[in-house]
Amino acid sequence: MGMLKEFKEFAMKGNVLDLAIGVIIGGAFGKIVSSLVNDIVMPLISLLLGNTNISALAVTLKAAQGEIPAVELRYGLFIQNIIDFLLIALSIFIMIRMIQKAKKPAPAAPAAPPAPSEEAVLLKEIKTLLEDKIK
Image 1: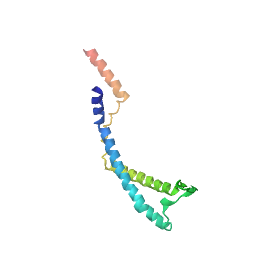
Image 2 (image 1 turned 180 degrees about the vertical axis):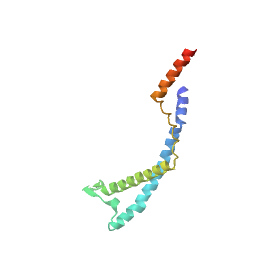
Image 3 (image 1 turned 90 degrees about the vertical axis):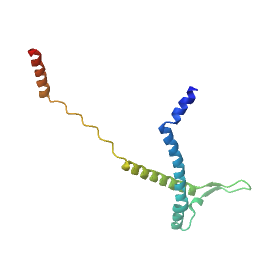
């Protein structure tokens, strides 16, 4: 029973919940960026390259034989995934910068009082000695 209670406490900590929410939002965000790449960016690049479907670019290493499919090096999909990754990384970078700018800076810790000068320390010692002699 103790292990179940510990697991519940662990699962309900803020960090775990924040992580779960981040994963869910990240998955949805990834779909949005993938759609941006597949449906907007890649067609524009394709148009600039003379109506070439970039995702279909491949080199056939071995031709298909009967029901055995061809062995292809699909570098077009690789290029598309690189563009996808770069856009996701750029978007996350921009979002983090916006969040950091929106956060208020933490209040500065009060400055420590300056250490007393040697003269002040000596005067205090003399004062203490004089007070002890008077008593």
